Image (cartoon, rainbow, N blue to C red):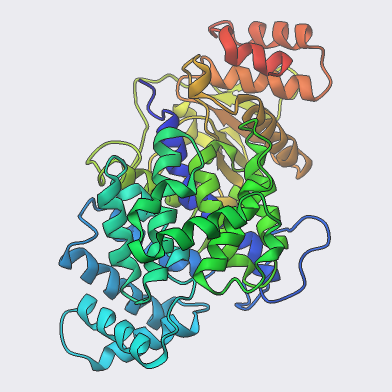
Length: 481
């Protein structure tokens, strides 16, 4: 079995899709919707750097740091850890925070009991005073809960409600978190988008209303739900953005279309796009998230795309596994030979193996494109900036399901190589042993430079006589899907 089968790709896409949606929506929060496509230009209410995520993903990461340990998220100990993470985030990491969440976290300081008990009681007291605690702040951070027990829908629902109730006592806030977490679980395990699948898990008194709300939003214009600070309309706007842009072809481009629609809905754009991005990422995987977004996305507490993948995949596997990907420090292997060959068409593209990653200075490269799993200490490579070392999700397995977006990914990696070269950078492109993924990408790059496929293939084979150069990966690289 490949180290990163399709379900792992989908799990890896959850936090990555959310963070990209968040950063894409940041510049337009409570402002005019974008003219044309939304871009990660920063600013917003933070203000934020280009590509920086906001409180939506920050709070999700508080939950994710606990979920990645593999514990039961409904247990008092896990809920204490999450509560303490929220409190620490408020004190030292929050760049923005919802009014309701701030009130709960602040008032909890004055209450007795364990950390999660203090938060839950503060949330209940706020609801008793105001009757208005159904903001979108619980829904926006629930995505990671959908990965914590991927084969147990009831456990997923129980955890979603427990985490929501730390700050949002209204049953509707818990219901929306349950629905979205279950939809993420289904998208990862079954590859389908079905928000109504969790209707039997919500508060019974509201099940019929939730069914109506979901039906109202399905394939609707997300702009119909402008007051999306409310958890119901936030869910509707995100679901409308996803379903109104679904062309039924399971294309990786649906992720980008859906996030653009979410931002154009206006108002709480970072939150709606973050919510939509988590489910789109769960459906289409990390392999569907485009380079330009993965290269830019970052945020508190000092994480980037690779870190989001590690947290999400570790959570989906039931917790970090000692010495195994994705949490292993390095994927290097002294038994893998170095390669370090110049691309026959462009000598400033260096074709290599995993062992060449440790000698980027010797090779004189300024950017790295990795086509295989990396350890936590492998990226960025020595002396490389985080933005100049990009990972791509390609499996050696020739089955179509293992690389569902193969043409998209090959286009994306070729585009990244051309972008790096336009920036004047010499680039190392490598997979683990340099036998299949590296030459296939080298072939697609040559074809995209305008070299005839037959000539490009002959040149690559002559430069790399050890390659396999066969099967679906090779064919799509040369001719497209």
